[in-house]
Image: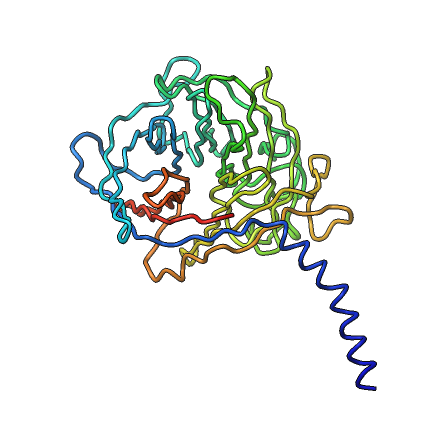
Length: 362
């Protein structure tokens, strides 16, 4: 009897182990090591220090570009590359560039809400966020010239992401509208298209911060509830008009603030829980996920729809430090030991903090 039970148990393992191994093979073997934080001084003379809402890295010039309201700040970071005590030694704001609309006028800071920024190989930046118009917040993804701040183009968004006027359309909240405070925050370019002079196309990925109204299980459920799903959009940039290739369902645990391309189909995401001011970094894999661009509603479990897979990399609460509003995440330069650096940015009304990590992966 014991022998039969043992054989049965081993038979179960023979079926379970390959499935588990296959799931593990989806993810890269990577980890993050916390190296310390740097607090941006509030009394810099060359530019007023404000709340940065997103940040991106320029490898060619070894500079960071942070967006705040209607302005882009150029930052130079200096590292103390002592192999035993690597840390941020200094952050200098070198310049500030205002963003300019197509009509040549500056965007109004109170109506232009930037949430994400990503640098292209052609030295332009894409910025995501929302434009306040009356009592509505209209989401956008726009390309700007980095040197002049001039608007170059706006990506076309599917209709489901544009809030419609309930009064004009006579619709209720369960139909084709988005909640006004939902916007695109995460913004990333695929790491494969990085040749600045070649003009080869790149893949742009963006995602909603939380769940669209029509995707919620109930009209009153929280937009970033654990059962909710964000929508991740995949654009091809480079051949004429930018083209939306696919959309994917991203399972939420909190608000999706940032997305970084590691390689191929592998990403890092940053999620923020506003109520507790805690955040988590996940590894995300889009391989095998179903294109949901034709799926009108992503409520509950949908037959035939495979969601994006994600795996917890780091719970920032475990660092034992006080975090306010997590607003940005980006890779930086190589550290002295050859590993890649990663920065996480947080702010409150007075202080901006930069958290430095070492990224290891195989």
